[in-house]
Length: 349
Image (cartoon, rainbow, N blue to C red):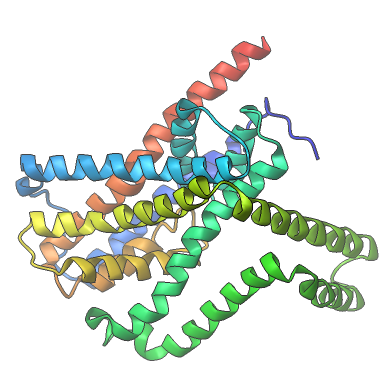
């Protein structure tokens, strides 16, 4: 279906509602932490302004934003498309804004496809590129999480590792197996999907017409994605491995910010322990239904790091972590989006 590249990627009224929900749930998350960990207050510590700390954060931010853009850039190159560096830079921040103000980051994918279509990338390939970029990160995070739950000392007494560790391993295995079947054995999924839709039709949960439309759409999209993934794997090795490498760099930079904040406040938490806790935190965030995992991310992060941090520093570290990795990019993305909207209107005038 053709996409109108002049059209806004999401209704502004809905965007305002989701943005308000993001702010509200974020505030509730901080309030819950403050109530749960009595004595936790948001007080600034001047040690975070140490020049060496600021330079470290700035350097890591550059790596974080650059690698985020480069992992999609190399994925697109592997699929045979080149997008200018300036456009890719803007796309990084537009994605950060939309993915954090919509539930389950659903708006981020649509906004990226909309923007890439404006840059001349066909909608099907743009959809495949953004999906592949996401799947690569998911594979790393979902593969590491069960291992970390079983081996990370900081999680040995947590409810996650004790209560649902086994179930989580099964869930992750099923999730990755589904992706593997979509990519390599797509036809295996057609019969189960048809059977499920037929059952829903018999139960009068969907109409016959709706059943046919859903069946056709799901098969078409799976086959398209599988074909695009094969083209991606057959693309120039430099671009294929470049996308994998920059995915690893992006994730490692994303997970490294709390370690810098902890060291700045004189907490001697081992680096790999901090990174491991962030991997599990991010895994939980994938299932959070709230915009940008607001409320959930703060709570999970606080519960994991409370064992290392004094209560008077906990909220500061959580806020600093979210500001550096999310809020800052969202603010830049909001300004970038306004610029793009104005540019589109001028062209249409």
